Image 1 (spheres, rainbow, N blue to C red):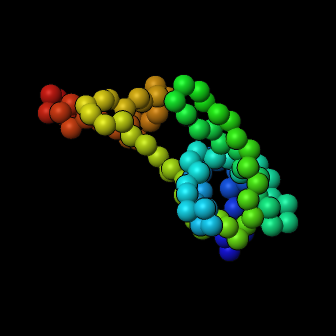
Image 2 (cartoon, rainbow, N blue to C red; image 1 turned 120 degrees about the vertical axis):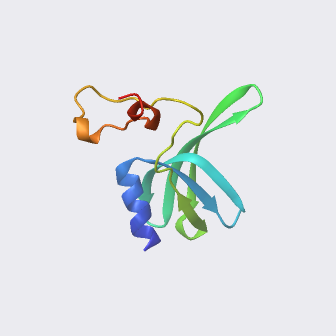
Length: 102
């Protein structure tokens, strides 16, 4: 089952976080490039002190313990969400304080 999910994520080209159980570490913001047999090829970047390093790593399928992906993010604080002008009025998100001014 995990094999099929990893293959789907590879086809989608989405950013994922991968936990390697044999090394007990997470690889963050990786893209799965290829699956060949039991080898998974991933590409990711790390930020080390004064440089950004780009890595391409091949791991065995059985060493992958978990995969997570970010579904959505929303900025914290009092920020108005961007609304497209062509969005139907019924689907637009309104600030609750705006309805009190009508």
